[in-house]
Amino acid sequence: MTRPDKDVANLCINQWQAATDVDAAKSEYYSYSHTFEGTQTSIKQQRPPKRKNATLSAHELPGYYFVTSVHELYAVLEELAPYHAIGISIETTGPDPLIDRIRVIQLAVNDQPVALVGCALFSRDSVALVSEFFRNSFTKVVHDGKTLLKFLRQIGIDLSPPYFDTMLASRLIKGGLEANHDLKSVAKAYLNEDVPNIHGSFSTASFTEGQLQYAARVARVAMALHEVLLARLEEVGLIDSMQLECTCLPAVVDMELNGMLIDMMQWQELQDYYTQLEEDTAFEVCSKLMKPGQRTLSEIMAINLDSPGQMKAAFKGVGVHVRNVREDELLKYEDVHPAVASYLRYKRIAKIKNTFLDALPTHVHPKTGRIHPDFKQIGTVNGRFSCQNPNLQQVPRDRQVRRCFVADPGNTLIIADYAQFELRVAADISGDTAMMSAFRQGQDLHRFTASLILDIPIDHVTKEERMIAKVLNIGLIYGMGARSLRRYANYIYGVQFTLEEAVEFRRRFFAAYSGLRAFHRRMSTSPMASVRTLSGRIRSWPEGREPKLTELLNTRVQGTAADIMKHALALLHTELTGTDAKLLCCIHDELLVEAPKAQAEEVAEIVESTMKEGGSRFLRHVPLDVEVILAQNWAGKN
Image 1 (cartoon, one colour):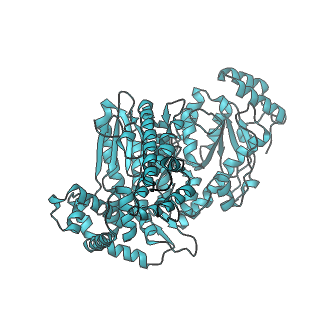
Image 2 (image 1 turned 90 degrees about the vertical axis):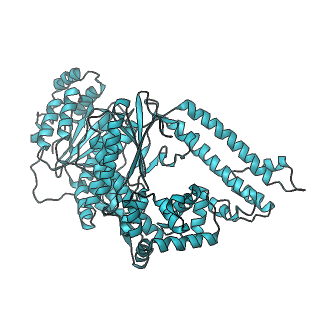
Image 3 (image 1 turned 30 degrees about the vertical axis):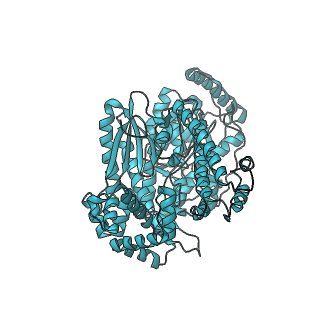
């Protein structure tokens, strides 16, 4: 391949990057003629002939050419049009798509030089040209497609499906096994290729030869991974799961770019309230640690409640000999001394305040005034989303907290969640006739279970009895033992019963739901090194490590629920096209959408229907019920 003279090429690139007016920059560019080794050459002439039946490793592939004019851009896109798969990468000035800019778009196809498109040339016409090209039906091969799509959206380019995200493919293939999924790690694992670290920043005025070679290599490696990972996905039966993940990509982009609006005045009031609550609870703990004839209250108050060593010693001083001060250990001693329960409450308050209330305002974006969390599509071993910066999945269900998440003036929040979602999935997968029948009849399964377990008419079930049944339903579908069930009931729901009662409740539950019990037995007695969800998603365990029953059940049920939600998100992204609604957030079984008040009812119907449709693809015997409310904030109804 021919290369441009380095000085001439860099001079042209610098002129493009420094120019503020694209048309003026074009004139300057053409005055330099962009001479390649003394001869003006077309893009087609630069490209070597295609080598049929030849496979090149990434380090053997041809080089690159830098596209710095609209004329060349037309030629590149025309040349790439016949290809069925094109690798697309970007280099940016930084990681934030709301502030940082794309500097280079890399387009790669097999056995050909990589086209590096300098984004300084992008005018309205060139953006429209690239947008039109990206709407074509070729497969867009990307690595970390979510980030790519977000940056492209910010310059007005919408990358249309189909996609093949090599990061998602790697996560699917590993099936929960520990691994890194950055491009460097995936390339080493599947191609035995070393991707060098980038030298220098793409925020500088000009690019070095090393930077351009790096940009080309990144695109080539992603493209080389496509064939290898596609074959591996086919081999292990993950094509449908890959399709599901890739079609969900645009919805994830929507959620991250749209973000959530916070009422900061209410949030400050909440921070002040929790600060006082933390102080009051700390005093309560110290008061209960007092022992007559020993240390004074002022001495007790000097104890650092956040020091595990000091608290262990303090508990020992009142006769509570704990191994550590983790919650699972302390729960065993709640009935032994009143200071233990107070300290557990203190820890929960401090955690909410320190890791959530105090931290969340730091994530409010300076440009939008919203928080834009990072959703990881395959963020857990069973395929569920995870969330960070901040973790909205851990927003307490406290009304005081959730009322701070609000709609813009003139807009309404549509809050939709699957009713008893995982229980419906468990009923469908297990084939338990009693559970399936209850759902088909529109029963509230918690009341239904309370009636069966406590042997009372369903219309006589009290609120407290329903709560006991809720604990049993949610805990026992995942195979909890009696001790774990008791701790779970107390810690999560504040429901207390004895170990003997837990044993008896558990026995009655599985007597009532014998189909579920049989399903658990099948799962526990069949030797398994991996398990699949209803979409075919796989979770594997390391060789020699036998999975626990709870892990198998968790993957089958929660993993399938995640599949359903992702399919619903993909459908919703499409169905909301043409409305002014914005998809904001997904919290396991719940979706938040914001829409103008005039469109809210219409959008609510769309959300409900697509969520139900998402389930009908996978569940065959149990209907899904979706509860939808309209509100001004996340806390509840108008």
